[in-house]
Amino acid sequence: MSDIDRKRAQMLMQAADIEALVLFQPEAFRYAIGAPAGVATMWGRAGAAIAVVPADAGTPLGAVASDHAAGAIRAKAPDVDLRLHRIWIDTVDLAGVAEVGDIDGFYRRTGVGGPRPETFDCAQCFNLLGDLLAERGLCHSRIGVDLEFMPAADFEALRQALPQITWVDGSTVLRRLRAVKTAGEIDRLRRAAQAAEGGLIRMASIIRPSVALAELSAAWKAGAQDTAKAGGFALSGHWDFISVGPDLADLSAVVAPGTLIKADVGTLVDGYSSDGARSFTHGPASSLATDVFKALETAFAAGLEEIRPGNSFGAVHHTMVSSMRRDGFGEYFRGHFGHSVGGSVGIEEWPFFSAGNPELIESNMVVALEAPFYGQNFGALMIEDQFLVTPSGADCMNALPRGMRDVSVE
Image (cartoon, rainbow, N blue to C red; front, side, top):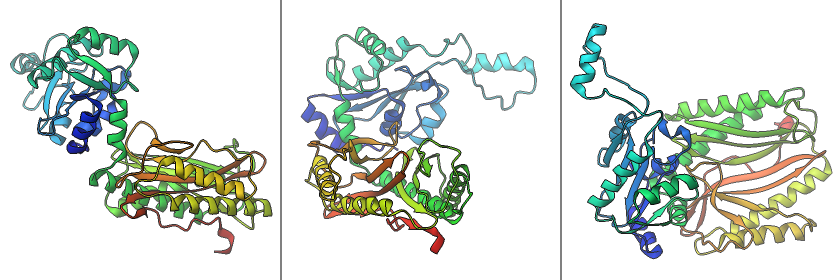
């Protein structure tokens, strides 16, 4: 099932003066169609999977994908108008075939035999795209493409294959579509945050002197997986950036009394990644670390007050920097204090809480607000939570206390 709000998509495309979006990035295909793009996208070239999103919300979605991916796409998105191209894999269903001699007959009867391309035939994919657009009356239209992804050589090939279409950059429209989440996307992100926090609880339970960073990471992963299993859902991935002690690059570090432990972690549910962070010690932290963390807490609280519909992402950044300045950090410059989260390529999605960003906060955005401090020969500290923007403010998807935890006193 597609995650696109078609009415919002229609509004954004009309404002951008385009009549459709044609999306090539695998994650954008998954977002638009509601099914995986397939293994042919592994080559990093455009064309193996193409999603067609007409501006008219009443016109059905279309897709071009490989014959290998067809079963999964039809199972998850049965209403999508799907056109298939052949790739290098000749998968066959041998139910009822008992002897080798029967296999060729099966190929002939089903029509799955014949030559296959080295990987996939981009020209054939663009021809199928042309058919889809023509059938929707879009063959002489102004159409947006996700050029933030598309290789220049492939875009030129697209323009040559379908020269009657005016191709323009549709990346901003796609960004704005993805920034506001549907109910299904919000649910995935909420569950992902829940699993990641379960991992932090497990990790905190083993923090003690001489425990290695790798052990903390393993405990976090196990706790996240167990939390997901107990919640009745599965994880499609996970990541962690854990640091222990004063050397931020020391992956062999072990816990010592009073050293700083920063855990910036996330799990993925159906491709949607959470993002959150907490800070720990075993034994009292230094007075410097305590003062730094207090400033981070104050800045985080100030920024959170600014997260509401109609305010700008830049206003949140300005408020947090100003808070740090008031607490004596005159040279603390942070490129951003958080970002949207979702199912795109990386953990961090646009828009960002960055300086001067005029993009407005909207209801049903899901954002991660972060207040970090990294100091070589000191350690790392971080507060980060995930929020659903509501009409009245921000609803936190996390439950763990934000303070720096000394686990030795628990």
